[in-house]
Image 1 (spheres, rainbow, N blue to C red):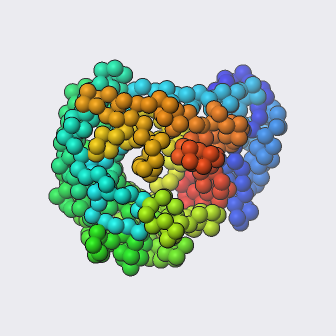
Image 2: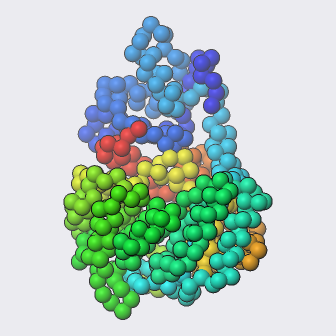
Image 3: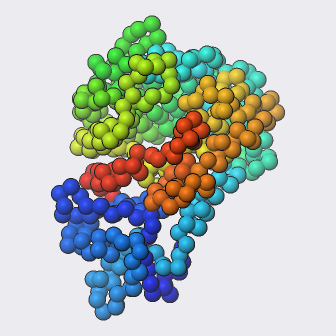
Amino acid sequence: MADTTVTSTFRPSRFNVVTRTDDGDAVVLYNSMRGSVFRVQDPVGQRVHDLLHNRRSVLRRPDPGTADESRLFDTLVTKGFLVAEEHDELAEADALRDRRKNRTDRLELIIMPTEACNFRCTYCYEDFALGRMLTEVREGIKSLVRRHRREHGIERLTVAWFGGEPLVAFDVIEELSTFFLEFCAEEGIEYSAGITTNGLLLTPEVARRCVELGISNYQVTLDGPAHTHDSSRFLMGGGKTFDEIIANLTRMAETDADFRVIVRTNFTEANSVHVPELIEQLGGLYAGDPRFGVIYRPVGDWGGPQGEESEAYAGKQAEMTKLDLCSNAVESGLAPADDVFLKPNGSVCYAASPWSFVIRPNGLVNKCTVALRDPRNAVGQLGADGDLGLDQELMSLWVDNDDAKDSGCHSCFFRPSCQGAHCPLVRIQEGTRPCPPQKVWIGPTITTVASNGRTR
């Protein structure tokens, strides 16, 4: 950023959003290059609004003699809401994107130890065609990590276990996690791991072993209270699952282990009215425990075998429902975990980064965990020597379809957060710009964040 100590003229940042609260007595400020949200009460809020609402304004620092005005102005500069007139914010956004895309110090692996699953969720898009990961693929993954350390000097390895239900093949997780821990310790590589699991097999013994294996982040789905969850997330062959999952999570909460659990709720228009019952129940169990957070997602048309029977829920009403649920969670003492999407790079899909790969049980290399049957997603084949066998043309579909080639994204206030890469799959399959819902409904989103006390 330009040196503002010698700058006399400023302008509002092109990445600002300034909106009034519903009650009209405060303004909420957001800047996507900083990822900051602030609520400012009137009458100061009105003065802030006057300074920032016109992006074409050229403003001079107030006379030092006007202490209050000068202090407010300097605060807006420090927080990035005012920038030096000569500062090139488009170049700054370009640099942010290029740093993400060009880094070679990081490797992110989304590993599917199996595509088998013990559940048959109504909206699932998977076909469970591939079973337990082949021995040669496991050896290829080990070679891949060694190779990236040798050739690229990676300093950070991130592993996300995915499925199917990954805990169905827990022995594969144990084998590879043991290798990752030992290799990263020997090489001085920073290592972190997480798992997306339905939670049924996350018994106290398994949870304890997962923590020992360096798996510190968990995403577990509960679709409302027992009666709605069990109607959409049931066992293969039928059978309820809610009570056992809750029991497993509660036993985790009773330990002093270091972990982070995100409880995800997939909601439809029909079941959303019941989600507050779940929020109340979770609040009674985990309120005040910083290890537990919640997220809410409308069920999408994810291309599964349910076809026309899908209960996909989209549009403004779905997003407003999500924000209402976040507010309910805060009132119940739970921490919504969605703030990351407002930060720089926060809404960029993992598939858009050249250093992120999905490794399937047969060694097929994908970029996306959703489009498993789309041939454009098959970007490589892992070899025993750790070579990913990448097709660079296919890779480019995923990592180069971004703000650099989209004039609309280029000028968007939300550009630092999503960089036109919120969902490369949408660009590939539909040829349209994949604007994230946080951007589309930015006013209600930042107002909700501010009202929930999550300002910074």
